Picture 1 (tube, rainbow, N blue to C red):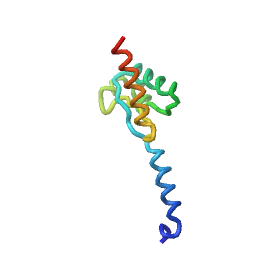
Picture 2: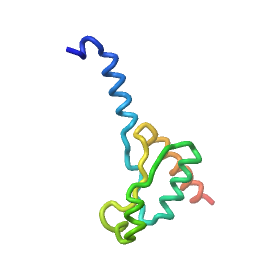
Picture 3: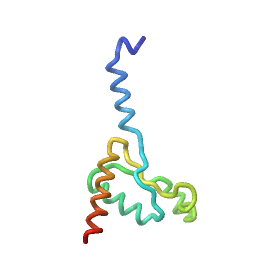
Picture 4: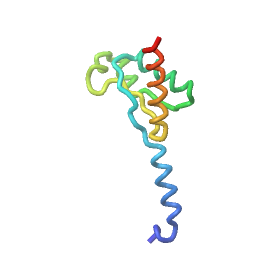
Length: 95
């Protein structure tokens, strides 16, 4: 019944939730690689975080088990973040 009375509220709420979802951008084997890419993304004002960072620092072999290190970005930033990393890697390959 509430959907009929306030449909714009539920559409707005759905959009906010979609923007807040996190998505794995890339998996890493080493902390150095993950930190480097995190800095590239931060330079472009893309919010991101490294998942499993503490576990790998305490027990380095954890990076080889499970999913290892992952950079997470908001779903709304995923395509832009992927483009930033791809552009950087392409520029390295051509030089």
